[in-house]
Image (cartoon, rainbow, N blue to C red; front, side):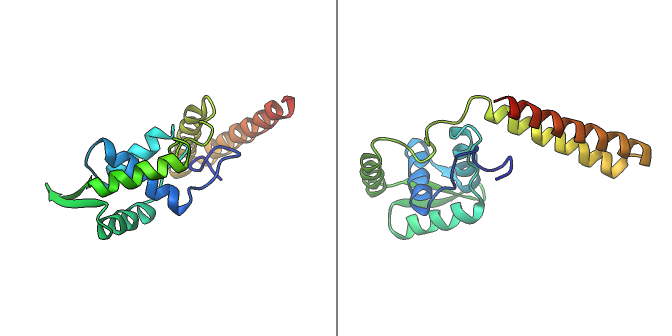
Amino acid sequence: MGFGGPPRGGRRARRGDVRTAVLAVLADRPLHGYDVIRELEQRSGGAWSPSPGSIYPTLQMLEDEGLVTGQEQDGKRVYSLTDAGRAELQERRERAGGADPWDHGGVPEGFAKLRDAGFQLGAAAMQAARTGSPQQLDEVTGILSEARRKIYEILARA
């Protein structure tokens, strides 16, 4: 997976994990959909950033089942956990041994920093692609090739 996916050895969230995760973040406070996504990414140390395509249908399903309620506030639909939702979350946590879905053995130290550095490097390369001269593009390509080679050298030492 790329920098946006889980760290090496990680996994994509299963449907039940998404459901449990949404219930867990809503147990703390009411949130709208994008806040749920941001909260899950933060709690996972950046290792998991669920898509709107997984979060919004889950919120709708939980609302249909009476586990969350949704209310319009300032033009956004804000979701809150119901008592039934709290009971389901408790049951799911007990089955998982108390672990939350984003706790997959922990995020390796430095993963978020590495991912952010990779995104920043990619952004700089794209800026060069959009605005650089042919000579600058050749220089940037050389730097990126050298960086890739050095990363593989570091991994080969492990």
